[in-house]
Image (cartoon, rainbow, N blue to C red; front, side, top):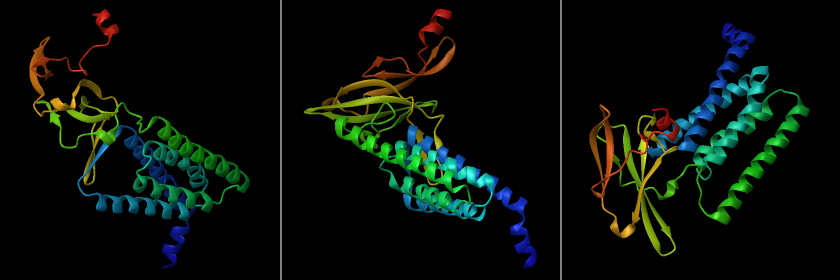
Amino acid sequence: MDKIVAFLKNVWFRRGVAVLCWGYTAFLVWVAWLCLGYYFVLENPAPLFILYLFVNIAALGLMVFTRKQVITQINTYLIPIAVLLILIFGFGHWFIIIPPAVVMTIAFFAAKSNETLKTVLGTMYLLLFVIGIAAYIAIGMFIGSFSFVEVDLSKRDTSYEYVSDSGDYRIVRYLQESGMRKTVSYYVETTTDDCEIPLGVCKKVLGCKHLHTAEYDTLTNDMIQWKTETVDGEKQDIPYVEGIRRENPYLIKPQEELEDD
């Protein structure tokens, strides 16, 4: 028992654990990135939330264990930035935001760092969080629902998804309403950048390309078709809208590349 206690108190062991805690910071940055540019499709949210909660609790325990290490102290100064990004990009998804926010708060105050520096940084971060929340709410009140990507994910039609024959692209649609006018918009997304997570998948929306917009009255599941065609000796996935050929938005070359050709 004494050997175990001595091992746990070993400074190099604690430093190693402190370095390991930086993996949690990287994890939070990754979660912020998913909140920014991905659409979450979850098979069973409850077990996933429990797993997410366990990761946060484990990280908190390790940071409290190494609270006297400088490596951990610096880490607790940077974690609030990652949590702020999660708050802004994933605003409203409180099951994602609250666990790291709790970890951030406890770890920040538990760290044995300079109290003056902690006070200054704590005040600065508090102001950033208050300003960020206030700005998000104010923007929502004046211009309505908005997103950091081109589309409003809340309008996504979860019953429709059309993947190309190669599996590299998919077409999704968004149902929109502006006053008395209802429209349906189709967008092309790549599937190669999707991210699989336990009990679900995150589908990349950031960078999606608009394909077609039509009146809601013309809504049909066979309006769009994928066809495989050979262009310049290469097989390409080409979308057809109501029988009319359209260029795949992802395969259209920028003007400067056309000039170089």
